[in-house]
Image (cartoon, rainbow, N blue to C red; front, side, top):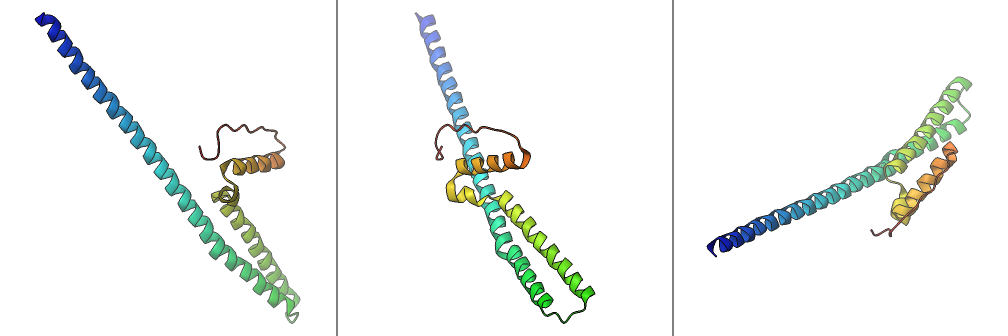
Length: 146
């Protein structure tokens, strides 16, 4: 009888340790999942901030530069050579605006905030298919909230 009682105690203690171990692993996995979610959110907020700063400062300054160059060019009092250099500078500034807009769009597509992840991915897929001629299909399960 003592042997059976001792075996029972060993099984109960073993089960308690096993339960504690499983609980610790579950807690550890939950913490890792929470950390990954917080890290992803922080990255997204930083990308959004950078995109907004580029738009609100750099792009707007480049657009202003284009307008100022247009005003100088429209004066018609400049000789041809300097006017051509101004036109070249304006074209460079305009290309920089396009480049910066592409960077901001790639950092944080506005459609992501406007319509959600599924529509943003669909739009990216459509853009890619139009650019490359590739064909693709997007299958979504769940909802945007998942």
